[in-house]
Amino acid sequence: MFIDSQMIVLASDANEWRYRRQPMDLHTNELDFCVPDDSEPELALARTTHLAIGAHQDDIEIMAFEPIKTCFRHEHHWMTGVTVTDGRGSPRGGRYAEVTDKNMMEIRKYEQRTAAQVGCYGAMLQLGYPSTGLRHGKTSDLVEDIIAILLATRPRHLYTHNLADKHPTHVAVACSVVDAVRRVDEGLSLETFLGCEVWRGLDFLPDDARVHLDTTGYEPLGSAVIGVFDSQVEGGKRYDLAALGRRRANATYFKPSETDVSEQVTLAMDLMPLLDPDADVVEYVVQFVEALRDDIASSLRVHFPAGDGSD
Image 1: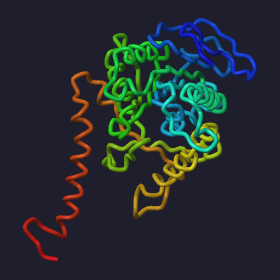
Image 2: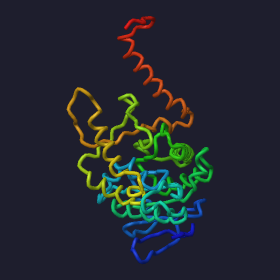
Image 3: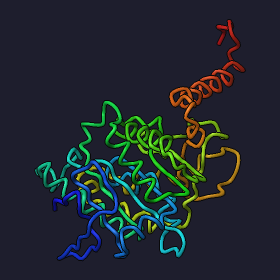
Image 4: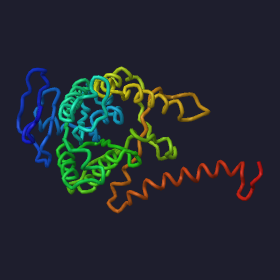
């Protein structure tokens, strides 16, 4: 269903959608805004405590499950999700192999709305930007739209992709979020700002720079919110198995000489230092790669001191 940019989806009845004017002035012409509990738009946004901004449909469910489970049916915690792209470039197989880009966009939007309903999100915005337009860098329109969303929600906890992700669209979205946060004139009262893993794990981060988000005990909910993306799961990408498997692996492979303290863990990069507008984003990330190199070199030099070529 094409949604005019001046309208938002407020109710998720399978046969009828009800619309009202959107509470924000955004650049996107294809905004799809779902409020699962049918609250007024301004209220749905204003009650936000946790905001998750992902590139594609299902990214939030993979990378930001911690706020989903934290806010699930909670009286005072509400998660708003934002998906930036339109889903037309999704890989497809099985019975979805011959689906056109136009139809895939509608399927993916519907799946994301369904995940929002299953997970009891406070609100779900899909901005509908083409992924191809973001792969070579963030755009001013997207940054300004994210600023508008930040001002409407004023979250205490903000989640996006990590800056070392290997998917260029993920990196563009994460950089847009960082840029937007830095440009909010009125200021935000962020307690946490995290970049989460999808297309690159974060176990390379030093222990003191790696944030562990415990999601133990919510495996059924985790399976449910990712399982609704049938076009991907049945279409050849088993994100339902991979996401929960990674969380289990993160928990088990945290410390080699200690028993597990959690059963499911999502890893994240702390982005709070980047709230400083003078902080160099590139250097902030590269320092962790250099620290990994130094750690590996130090470990190996115990056995192969410099200049020692012996076996």
